[in-house]
Amino acid sequence: MTAQNNGPLAGLRVIDLTSVVVGPICTRSLADQGADVIKVEAPEGDLLRQLGGRGRNAGMSGKFINFNRNKRAVCLDLKSPEGRAAMLRLIEGADVFVSNIRPAALDRLGLGWESLREKNPRLIHCSILGFGKGGRYCDRPAYDTVIQGVSGIADAFSQSNGTPRYVPMVMCDHTTGLIAAQCIGFALYRREKTGVGEAIEVPMFENMAAFVMAEHMGAMSFDPPLGPPGDARLLSKDARPLPTKDGYISISANTNAQAFGLFAAIGRPELRDDPRFVSVAARTANTPAYFAVRAEALREKTTAEWLEALAAVDVPAMPCSTLEGLPDDPHLNDVGFFTEEDHPTEGRLKRFRPANQFGGGMREGHLPSPRLGEQTAEVLREAGLSDAEVEAMLASGAARQA
Image 1 (tube, rainbow, N blue to C red):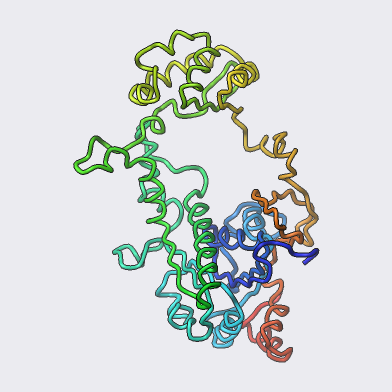
Image 2: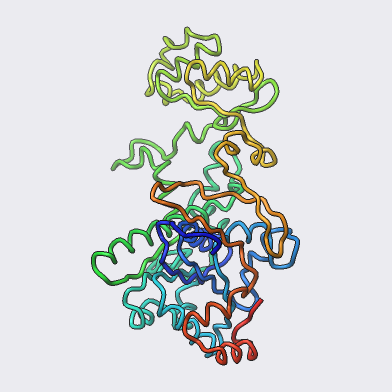
């Protein structure tokens, strides 16, 4: 590490047998807060090294770099006896083990909870799954788009525009990964009180079904249902950035003070007495009409003019940023969100810091995202393997060093 580690998870060791997005997001969260995260990859490497778009060098895509900062990388062939034995040595000295491998495959490797708890009773064993154990989908493979479809996210778009589609981000992976990190924190707190570890199951489908239904179950929460599911405000065709004279603006006016302020800003103060808009309940019942008034009015001025007018009446509104423009956002620059670094092999990079700040101290050192197997020998020696054992594994292909 390049500086003192004052992160809240300093001293915690995590063995990271995850790939692509959902698992690496979880372990990146732990690494950013000071945990020593050991990313274990097969000889072919994490799929995201290739799937994550263009990079300067093979195996170091932009996505992989963003999702795997602050980690050390070990490359082991877990199909070999030597590779499995080395993996068990790593786990024996770990606090947390995280995987997003299907349970049957994990058990075949001898890395299921029942096997590992005997070797390390304090271990927190976190399995991120597509579908929870006990259900008929439990052995099916899953990616983000699959979960967006089965959890109802894709259908939510069809409620407003007639066509199901995916959110253009791996939202299910990000959300579930962060939930997994949260669950690990809960389990670590219990371990502080009990002294023993436990198994955690974090299924993508159930978590995203809960995410969707918390928003849209609505009137179906009652038995018998009081109406169909769906939040009309969120499913409206006008629940989107709205066009102005020269661009787009994002606006939300929910309270009476905000709605009445909006009416004043658009030059329609009389609408505050309109029975359709006089209260939160009235505006909710008349969402299409309320949103239509808003959308029609905002076309009449520029984005800057509306931002000034809406700020004067304390109505939440912001410009609609582009992907290209977000790195130049003045607020993000104020708080130092984007920084630059010189990566040892990938050259000059722009990166973003962890968004959340801890008053008790943060991880001050930054580890650049690792090449495949970059720290294999270093970590195996830390686990107690001799130089001769490490060299033998490298020679046989049971391990690989960048």
